[in-house]
Image 1: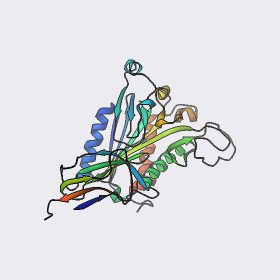
Image 2: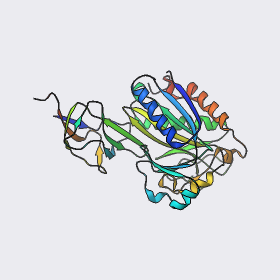
Image 3: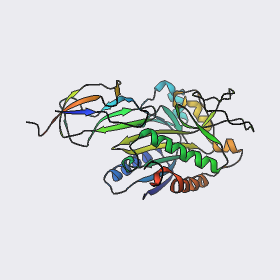
Image 4: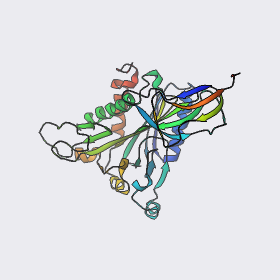
Length: 81
Length: 239
């Protein structure tokens, strides 16, 4: 299982709002593919999937706030036993 | 840093938007290291991801009569208007080559715009807590007031906005960007919306200098400033 974590977006940015999930739970995702879009005041930022596998769980929904370092989703990796 | 310049001239929003996305893909695939797209748009309203429909004040019939379409786009920010009197600046650059910092990029874009305006004798400033470029409408010899969190100087003079910024980032590659109000043409169309969802008075370079400003001249200076002084050349403080 791989956690999808909001990375550092820049100095002084503590978090963002989730604006768009490109996939729903149960979907297959590929490493590097856009997974979720978050927005700060003047910017949107697309977070790519950290690995290939199945999007197991979405922990925060569109419209919700997410902090830097917080887990947004869980992906079951393709190579997981 | 090698950067490919694309000057689309007067372009309808949809085709320029499609073009941006095709360039984004080429930068992602490393066919291009980075690009600077310049264009002017036919009148259009765009809603960013924070955009609220109620910030479009004009009704559908009025917009139809004016032949102004509305697009929901993937940039940050609220609603804005674009018209032929503006220069739109869409840098497609990989922040991984500079600094993975959204605020650094926004401040770098602002710095570029301030440099360009300064070359036209326009004293402009940023506002603490707000993105974009503002000018004080009162031409005065008094020292410039400290930027306040509202769009007002400390002496209560309402500042006017001359350039707006709204960006999107995929794989740390930027698209969308800034629009600079150059000409007075169509400035009145900003009254169709609440720009950025705020009660903002917009102005233009022509209004500030009190005479004609040629878009081609602004482009020329912007390109020069980009290569000479901006963070984006790879020689700036961002490395």
